[in-house]
Length: 64
Picture (cartoon, one colour):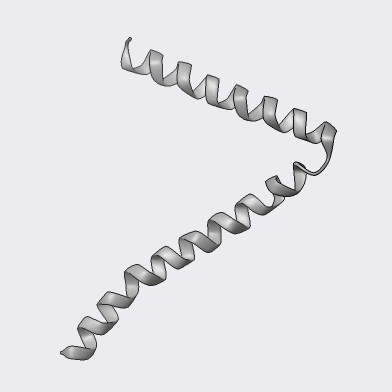
């Protein structure tokens, strides 16, 4: 029974490390885009437009 609980405790650590690795893999191409000045401007504008769009959608969905 002791082995069972050791294995159960390992799963959250595995999940956290897998999630951290996935986030790093996803962010790496975006980080590389910041090295090119023209793409940096486009990326910043795109991210700000996405955040504003999401904000207004959520604002209208909640009825405020």
